[in-house]
Length: 517
Image (cartoon, rainbow, N blue to C red; front, side, top):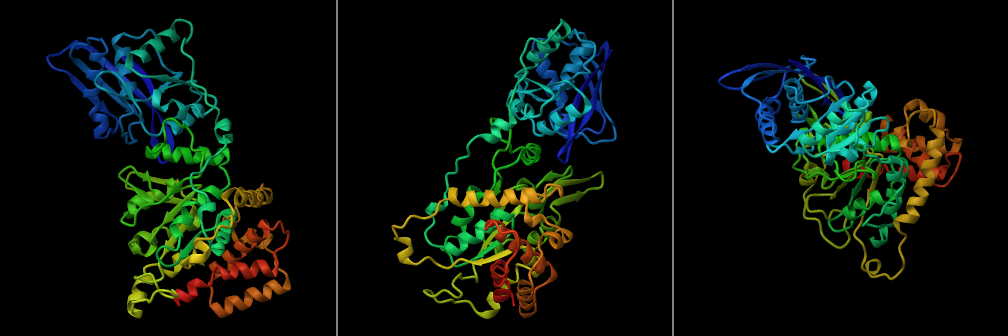
């Protein structure tokens, strides 16, 4: 007997509906003949043992027979353990243990334990989106995935904990209606909850220039590089950056959650990513770990930081080849990973925050400590960060050691709340400006948009021209100066970019000539 169920496979951050066709011969054999076809990977092929044990331990006695399961379309590779549940339900349906004769309005996903219990699987959010797009009314998922799937409106999400619960749910649907209540989650309510941050800029003593640079960076989504001696507070400042960022909009939260769901790092209780990500990988990370990879590609750190911050501490300690692969996503906001069987793209529009010492010992230009590095040592150290990568960083700021008086000062420091209010006001101006352009921040402006929104007075034009000639800045640096100047003007609620705005933006490009000249 033939029975069909529906499931889904995730490729990139999107899901494709998969037909699970189960043929049960009914003829007893001496041993179990269980075949899975349709390009299954090892995890899918091994599911026959999990499924057989789960069915038996759930109280069903299916004698040895020939079972063939086809996962269609057959030309797409299937991977993961999420097909366990639809396979088991398909076998029960073919065996006659279900009252429904077809499951066209149910999509099933979940991993089975040997006792029939359901375990969570990654990628449930894009699966829910695919189910809604196909017009499938009901989605059956493990309990730990229910909050994540319920974020998608237009699909009834049912939370189950065992194979027997799924069978009872499907049988109740055949008898006039589903008795269980679908899980309800309000995404807007989750995003509207007051956000609390454990780290606050009130804790940072001194470093007013660095705080100002981080405020500009957060207001416009600009990349920033902090250079200073050990202990000057670079990491401390960077870790407080999320506390002044604008909150996620719903479309950003949904896209970010899809990436985290596919990667399997989503908090099961949250269901939705409500704060901008802050990722801080160690400098021993590989290219695949940073960009993404695998036989069926998975997102890397640059994609997990999408719509948030990627913090690279001790930047020159990262292998140069690892840093160089960031150049394309920094420019385009996407990562494309090509394999023989497929080519997948992941979003990677993040704000890069990086920190580094000025030399191997860390005390070059320090007034209190003597630098022990020779010029060749410094050149080797600095050259690990290439010019093209540096060009893609909008703001370069020096973070000197904090003086004793500043450390012990009793004066109240400005907190994250005050800084964030100014950032939010600047972001609102950008949102209104780019309402028709499908971008959200000044850092995302194209060359055409720069010409439209960054007009300069004669004095500002003259100042920028002198800076370009004297510092030997590139065309890319020219565009980034204008973007930063536009953000500084937005922070001051100024309609036009003034000479002061251009002068401050130019100051944020001088360190690359001081250290990399």
